[in-house]
Image (tube, rainbow, N blue to C red):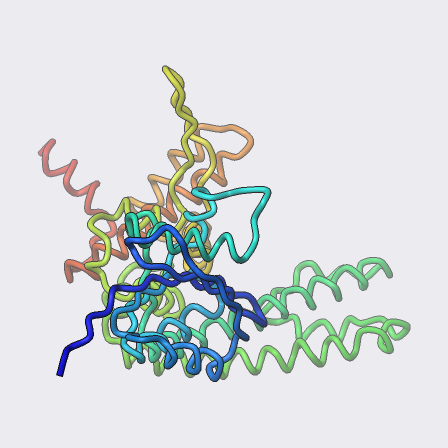
Length: 357
């Protein structure tokens, strides 16, 4: 029986909420075909099973809400799936004539020509993604609580009652006692919600504590004060593998903590940070940096480093110091995890003293 040889096929998936625009071609041909299917597992299954040879099919798609589950699902049929970094791709084909079909076609062309131009990313396995959802759900509740507290504070202030000294931790207990009677119909419901959300956040904290036991590597990451269980777990689940980055600088770039550059001829200026990386982990690192530079932060190399930057002055000196400490903190966490070393908060100071002794 004669064996059938199939040429490798390349497909571009441009995914939206309800539909998927698909463009397909082979490497040898400039011509291709376009089709639109609904964004559902049933439609994807029907489409893939109709292909001559899914095992010889390369599918390129951009990162997005659907890319984690969809890439897993497509891979289960034997397809080779490339998940392209959406922000980097925007720099390649930013066009006023943007449309779904064109985006799908461009994905295919890059996959055929040079897959490195797609800036491929690898999603974590489903178990880690599920665990990360716990932190993200908690994070959402925290932000909702902060919004509610801010609303109540402003409305009470507008009626002459100042509750600015209350903290997010004690607000739900103390604010009701200071609430003017005329505001009770308006604000009592919000205060009940703040109290309820506070209890739900505590439940998430208990789940996160158990997850830290599930991932013992978090103990290495938490050696540094200012890096709690949430930051450590978020860092571990998002990064996945400490060998993923060749250096702390590459990690900082992934997290969007490196400055942008404006370079032309003899001009080479550093601007603000790119903010193009993982916003979720970056926010926790910024919070950690604020703790380190705050009143409760211990005297250490990292704090002194930030204070030197802040001492230079300027309108945004404190902000620059916070970002710089967050960048150093990401590198420190990375090295503690990757190299399995014991943290010395005064390592650099001790080294200098040893040299002068």
